[in-house]
Length: 296
Image (cartoon, rainbow, N blue to C red; front, side, top):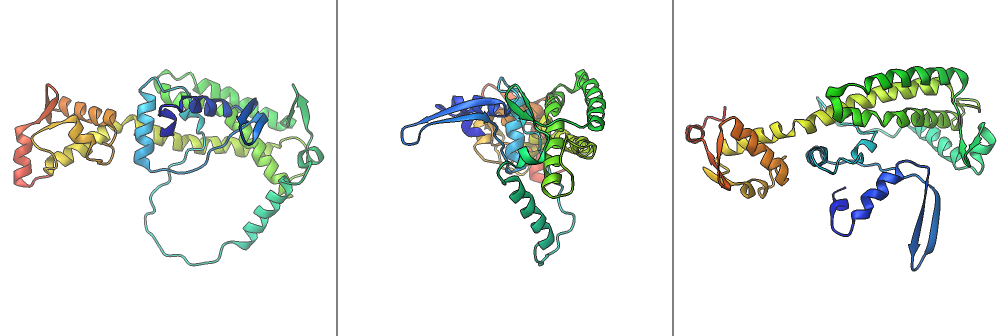
C-alpha cells in the first residue's frame, strides 16, 4: 500500500480503485507476453499487517487529500482480539472439513459450472444471478434500513466505509449461495433467502470490526501522545528535542512524521511540552518526575 505513493507508481492507486468494481475491462501490454485483454477485471486482496502500520496509514489517508475511497474498499477488515490464555495444541487438521473444502473448490472449477447449475441471466452482456422472491424482500428491507443509517452526519468517516456495503451485502449473498451449491447443500437456482440473511449478518459482524479499527485510527494522535510522554518520562529524549528526534527513533506509533507531529501537538495542548521555534522544550515538572523515578 505504501508503494503506491512512490514516484513512478502513481497509476497503481487508480488501477486498484477501478479493479474493485469488477465490471470494467483492462489491457496489459508487455514486450514478451504481448497484449493481454481482461474482459471483466475484478481484483481481490487478502493478507495481514501489524496494527501499528495499518493505523498509521489509516490516519494519513483519512486526514489528507489521499482519502479517495481506497481504504473503504477493504470491506473484510477484521481486528482479532488477543488470546486471553494461550495453550499448546497438537492435533491433526479436520479431515472432514478439508474434504468439504476440496469438493467446493473442485465443483467451482468444473467447466460450465455456472451455466449448468444456476439460473444465469444476461444483463448488458454480463452473466448475473438474481435473488429469489423471498431473498429480494430481505434485501429490500436491509437496503432501506441501511440507507437511513448512512444519513448520520456525525459519523462521516465510518459512513464512507459503510456506504460500500451496498455492494458487499449482495456480493456475500452470492458467494454464500455458490458455496452451498458447490457443497451440495443447496439446489440450483436463484440466490436463497438463507444466503441473503447470512450476508446481512456478515455485514453486521464486519461493521463491528470496521468501527473498532477506524476508532483506533481516529484516536491515534492521543495514543501516540501517550507513547511519547512515556518516552519523555523514561529519559529517552532530552529536555529539548526536535520533531526529527521523535520519528527517527522508530518507536511504536511514532515512526511517521505526521503522527509524531500530532503527538507533539497533543502534549503541547496539555502543557507537557512547549514549542520553541523548531524544537520542543519539556516542562520542568516532567524532569522532576524523571529524576524521582515516578512514571505515573
